[in-house]
Length: 302
Image 1 (spheres, rainbow, N blue to C red):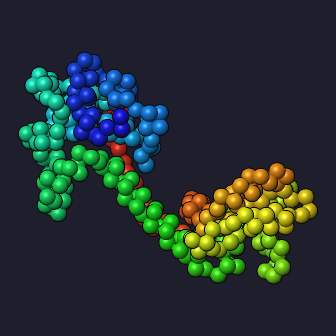
Image 2 (cartoon, rainbow, N blue to C red; image 1 turned 135 degrees about the vertical axis):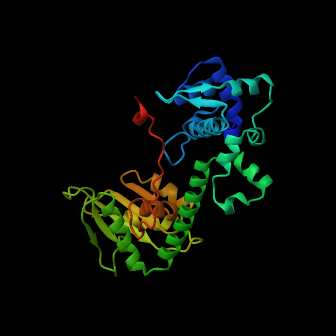
């Protein structure tokens, strides 16, 4: 079973609250997970950007819709949830599911759904309902964020592939320094013997790591001879190396890196490179910061 859509949690929420007088959100989510839904361990751990599991987020929005319709209430003390008399009446009608259409019979819910902008209220109702029943507002935040990140990664990779190859080498060395490695040393641009830079594994410079950076087009994969030459260029007791490319590695190159018994070789392809650069703020900058807030029930404890 896949992670339920938020509207698919609403009937189980009412059913569970009809059995238990009062439940916290965590207790409710745990009970639903154990009694009503069968998820894989991976699905149970899947998170949304606010730090909650996706399942907990879906239950949370199911709770919100039911609360806005007056079918459940949230206690003033502790924020625990209980079913209302109206919620019990809905259950007595033996519904197969709780839908947004069903909730629209309650004025408080209609008022809640009409509180958005004029433009949002003019969206085709049928299309809006299909969207509402599939995604929570948190899902929309995550979808938008992921789309922005995918676009940024693509733009960043394109920029790297079109930059000066010597500048690209320096970008890679700057990245490793930002990641917590020690000082770096650029090698001469001619006759570098397959090594583009040397970086200290730690800030004291106790151990060195060789760096090779290849600015390749996406379709131009790094092949086995490049890894072999990189390993052969290591000298002076250096046994660790990082090979970075804006493209990817073919199977022969990856196998050669794995088989380098006397050396530890890490391969970083274009996708992983852009991920590391974004995470460590190399070549990117914050444009807009959004702060999403939630109700602090502890504040209202009397």
